[in-house]
Length: 267
Image (cartoon, rainbow, N blue to C red; front, side, top):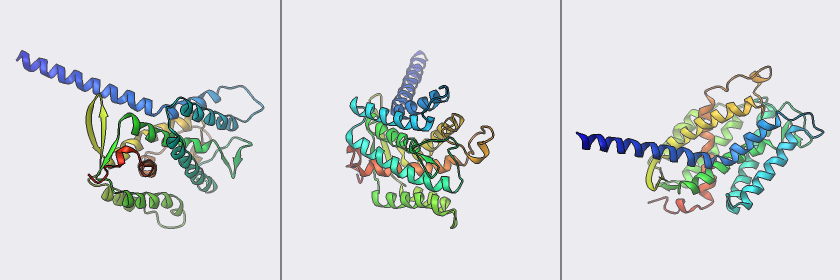
């Protein structure tokens, strides 16, 4: 009985340590996003300045990008992927803002068609998270189907534009994404122990935490949905699904960059 109790205690202690280490590593992977949102938060406390807040955040985003690169926290390849995420994000913003899906109500010099350039850093932060998580967790995709997954991810991206004029097919695309990633497993390491998770499940979990981050970002005034213009309200829960789909695009980009963990994708 004593032996069983000691074994159970040891197992529980090990599990807690694993969980804490996993949470800490996730926090490290989110370093860019944390730094960016901290800058957004601090910018709300600044007194009136001759430079618009959105323009200051552009400079701040460039500075933290350089810092991460110079410190070796992100490689040149990481920066390239993050830059692509930035550009794709800005294109997404230009269409969505023009259609009134959300807005950036504050003035700025570095603002085009209602979208401040700093808006792209919000998507760059997601790209940074995926790149850093890939390194820190030593991620490996097993039985990954790159072409099929990339094709569905591209269709997901396009649907977020076309659904304003054509039928919204996000749910059929979600089903197709589950189908093409069926059997695809993400292997990752926590405290020296190799673990695994279905890729589709990782999309959902990341989507949930991106929704949490979106609530914080809109509360800080990073952007505003129409129903938040006269006072902050929580972001609709259905955005979890949207983020779960969108994260597939970032994962496809990182995998296409040729990280070691994608070399054995068909094993």
